[in-house]
Image (cartoon, rainbow, N blue to C red; front, side, top):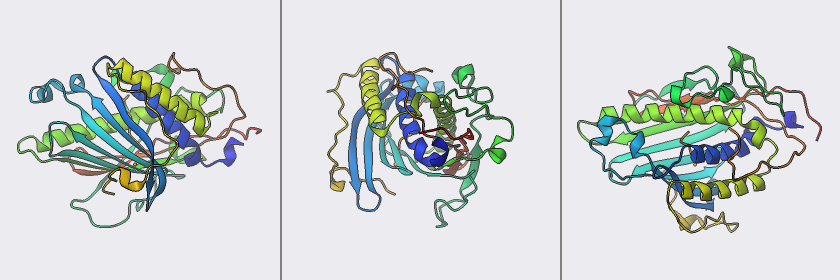
Amino acid sequence: SLSALSLVVQYCIGQLYMISKHSHEQSERGEGVEVVQNEPYEDPEHGSGQFTEKRIYLNNKLPSWARAVVPKIFYVTEKAWNYYPYTITEYTCSFLPKFSIHIESKYEDNKGNNDNIFGSEPREEETEVCFVDIAYDEIPERHYKESEDLRQFKSKKTDRGSLQEGWIDTQDPIMCSYKLVTVRFEVWGLQTRVEQFVHKVIRDVLLLGHRQAFAWVDEWIDMTMEEVREYERATQEATNLKIGTFPPAISISETPLASTARSGPNSAPSTPLSTEAPDFLSVPKERPRKKSAPETLTLPDPGRRDSLFKLPSFFSWNSSPQPE
C-alpha cells in the first residue's frame, strides 16, 4: 500500500517528473532549459547515480538592471549529480567566470527538524536557516494557478490535501527537502546585489517546483522508475525543440559511466525553473497505487552567501492504505 512506503522513496519519482514537466512549461523559443547530457554516473563515495548537464537560457527573465550589463545571448550551465536522497547541483555562467551556485540537497522523512543534516563543520559565515511552506508562502503572481493552490487542491487518486493552516505540525506522514545553498559572485560593486537576487530566484523556483510536485501527484503516483525515465527522455527532446535547439536525440543510457568519465562536484538531482501532462505524452495507465508523504524545504537569507534552504515543501499524505 502507499502508506507503507516512505515519502522520500515515493518522491524520487515525483521530483523527476516535476523537473521535466516544469522545465518544459517554462521554456519557449530561445528561452528555457536545453538538456545536453543525462547519463548514469558511478561515484566511489555515493555509489550509483545520474549525471545531467543542462544549459538554461534566461536573458529575458533577468531584471532590467542585469540585462544592461549582460550579453544579449548567454546561458547558465547546470551540472547535477543525483544520488537520491542526496544530490549536488552546480551552476556556472557562460560569461562570468567568478559566478557560481552550489546546492546540496538531502531528503528525510521528518518535518524539517534535523538541524545537523549537513554536519556541524564550521563555515565561512554563519548559515541562515529559512523555512518555505509550499501551501502558505506567497509565490509570484504570474505563477499562481488555482489548480496548484495547495490550500484547495485535493488528490483524487491518493486523497491527499487540502493543506490547512498548521498542516506542517499535524500531518503524518511528512517529509522535508533540505537545501544548502552557496552563492558566489566576486565582482566588485555588484556582488551583494547579484547574490541577493540569486537567492530570491532560487527560493521562488524551489517553492513553485515543490508546489507543483504535490499538485501533480495524480500524474506521477502510479509511475515506475522506468516510466518516469522514459517521460523524462521524451520531455527533454520536446523541450530542446521548443526553445529552438536541435541537438541529436537525447538518450538516457543504460550503461553506467565510470566515475572518471565526468568530473564530480566539490562535495546532486537538479533544481527546476517553473497542469496536466504535455500534449505529446500520455500519463501511464491506472496501476495499483503506492502511497506517498509530505515534504519540507529550507531556504536562504538574501543577505548571506551561505544559506540553508530547509524547504518545507511538506507533502501531507495521510490517506487510508490502498490495496496493492
